[in-house]
Length: 207
Image (cartoon, rainbow, N blue to C red; front, side):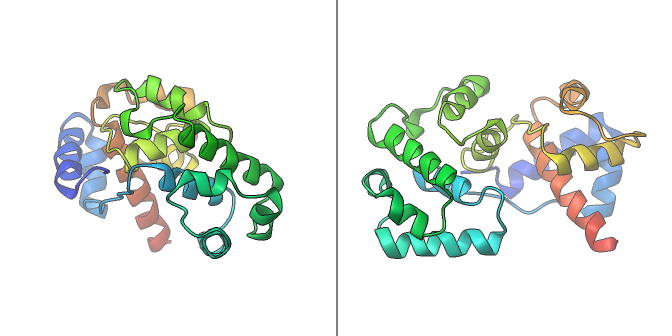
């Protein structure tokens, strides 16, 4: 499971002590809520289904898939499905191939989501071996489903925008710049990302 409210509060308090921008941001936005997903195959499949579509569209496709295939918690269900069935649920040809790749990796045992490597970079490498799972998707899974405290999705646009804004930077930092900036925030960078999303949403609500 992801980082709990208590873990987030502890980490953000630690961040506020080493970076004044977090202390100021905490005064403005308060602590973020938990963002927790169940670990395992279903959450990764939902990630693929939800890529580049709205939340509502992703929910509609998921419901159609469940209606056509039945139990989506079992990877064998998607692995055995015809491409036409996956397409009928609303998956693009590319996403159908991604969903099948994930299902086959898990059902064959080549990918064991219950025992991913303890090292974060090794776990990211294991997940990105799956077609359709890039670094960002892998990082989001490890942060929200496994609660890995130092996962840092520096390629996320909202994180880049909000960290840049909080730090008073003239321009949005690149992924490389953001990784360098975040070094003093170890081992709490997962909470830093969650706080950045929370602060970004607060800024949008104010605007």
